[in-house]
Image (cartoon, rainbow, N blue to C red; front, side, top):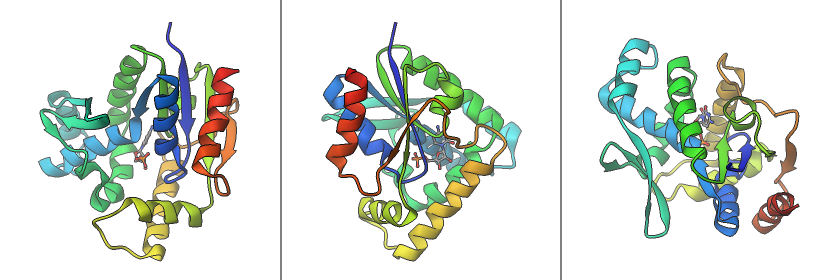
Length: 217
Ligand code: C5P
């Protein structure tokens, strides 16, 4: 059977980069579930479907395919036969993703796909509800946090093409956290049985080493 490691936490806490490196060093797969919700968001916006239009969204969900592929050592996301790795990281997608990811029909479809993907190999699963809803019986769970200031700083460094001030970035992250933590469906919650990792004052190497130590234990 396959080992599942979960990493949950708010936006910019370092989950993605850490999960990617942990996966690289341990040989596990890396499942970036935020990318999947972002992919749905890109598809919905392009189709002109608003978050209120649940039945249109359900139709959309059954007509599209989301898949990950490996290209030149990088994991990329495909929406049908199109690589949308750039689109899913845009500010417009970031601003809208919480509204679409709060919808029960969207979460049901994503949860099923995530469980299928993770049961094919040992996987580090990263998102908001990995340890609570999607993989409640995961072997090892982590909850990553960092100060809002540090998270805004990191996200600014990730955005190369768009100009946005530190204050705006902090405001958008805080807003997304509030939406993700207060929604009815699978809100962002710290799993009771997770190791908590505050990365505010940790180096990237320290974060990665902490998780790998627990996996190898
Ligand atoms: O991790 P990332 O910041 O890319 O996630 C983007 C958004 O996707 C989150 O703000 C949240 O609304 C949604 N998400 C979710 N459940 C997950 C992963 C992400 O609702 N497991």
